[in-house]
Each structure stands twice: as structure tokens, then as C-alpha cells.
Length: 186
Image (cartoon, rainbow, N blue to C red; front, top):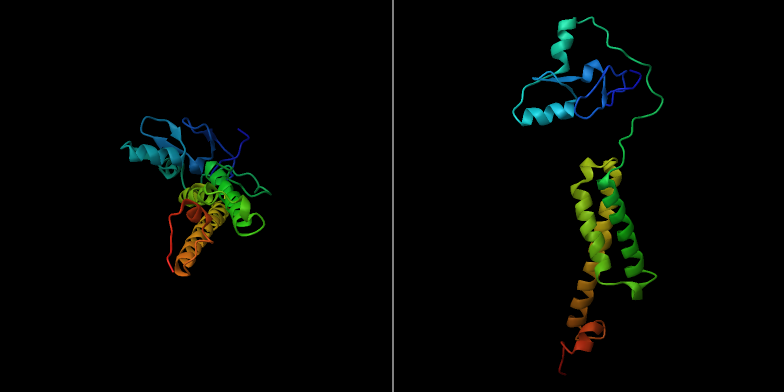
């Protein structure tokens, strides 16, 4: 087998019989029914109450001097692939940036009511799943950008409403003035 182990990049000697990922002898776990499995599958099986055996169980039988097959270290760093958590964080970051630009800057007239709430919602979802993202630090940053874009606009609207009530003016709240919901007598 010429593949590299998914966990440590050593030369793989087997594949997980559940997920088919390549594994070296040092990362190969065993189920009580004899299946060769990865550590992730072993954790799932042990949580279900099944007995699993660590790689050291069988490596100790081979002896402490049993060499594990190793290939030279790879020149590249192993990267986890992007997943849905990265996509949600990216959407939160882009929509948060759009919310900041349109609602605070160049397009105040383009700012629609659901636009700032979308990055706020996506940012919260992105923060919840950031630990499972392919690049957790980038996912956290983009999610916080979404939260800032959404929360900033919501805070600005609340401040404008409070200021207009405090100064007795409904000019700053045209939607309320058109509906006639605020009337102030001199």
C-alpha cells in the first residue's frame, strides 16, 4: 500500500474497514469483532459500549523494537478539507461585510431590514460550528465579522429610535411617521 496514514502521514499498512481511510500500524485500532478501524470509529464504538483495542495492544505483542514503516516526511502540511462550517462562516463574513458597507456607508438607501439579521444569524451558527471547521481560526474570524455587521446595524437602529424619541422628533423614523404611530404635542 503506497498511501499515507491520514492521522500521522506515515506509510499506511491497512485501511479502516468502516471509513476506508488509510492507517499506519501506530494508528490502527481494532474492534472486538476483529475489524480494523480508525481512532474516530473506535471512539464511536466505545461510546456505544463496544470493546475496542488500541494500536499498542498489538504493537506490544510484536515487541518494543518492531519498526513501524515510515516514509520521509512530506514537504507539505496536511490540510483538513473545507466543510459546511467553513461555508457558513464565509457566508456570515461576506453578508456581514455587505451589511456594514450598505447600511453604514455607501448605500444606506439599499439597506433592507433582513440584510443585517442574516449575518447575525449566520455568524451565530458559524461560531457554534467553528471548532469543526477546516480552518477554525478563519471560521471564527468570519463569523465574528458577520455578528459585528448584524449587531452593529441593530444597535444603530436602536440608537436612532432612542434619539428620535428623546429629541421629540419622528423625522429620523420615517416608517413610524408615515404610519402616524408617534405623535408629540407641543
